[in-house]
Length: 186
Image 1 (cartoon, one colour):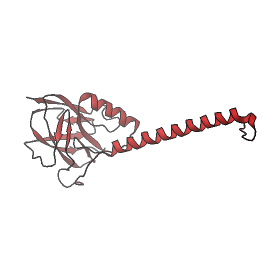
Image 2 (cartoon, helix red, strand yellow):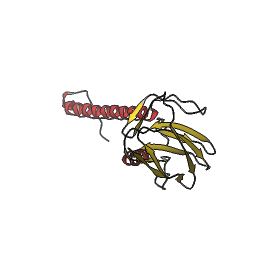
Image 3 (spheres, rainbow, N blue to C red):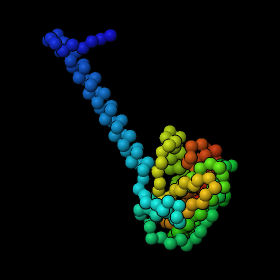
Image 4 (cartoon, rainbow, N blue to C red):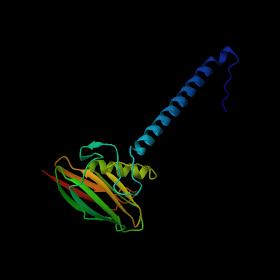
């Protein structure tokens, strides 16, 4: 076992090594702490929701696959069933640019399920993150968590033409095929 002694001039190199080690551990600790704090703030999201009474409300949000504003009114309603077969019904949805869709989600299973809208790339990336951090909790206007046997609603406005997706990002569900497609027509 190596001992560091700072009592005489011969130990000066040992003191420098000890200071370098201390700086290294401090910077590692600081970096790790900052990373954890940023991850937690990302996971927390920004929201204020209705706790099961109607459609939740959030702060205004704009993404590459649409937007949410608290004062939106639905122009279309789509019912989506979430089941323990790791499938959505319907698995494919078609809407028009400008449609404000009120999604009504019914979880017919015994497991918690989610419905998250995104690009196919963002959904796959988010699913990987959920595998690493399975207890991460977050809420955004383009996602909803539905308890077994319950129903939930969300509003989303599709503002851009294109192919997008949706999925359940509960760890293992997306990978088991619980995903679908959204085609937004001009």
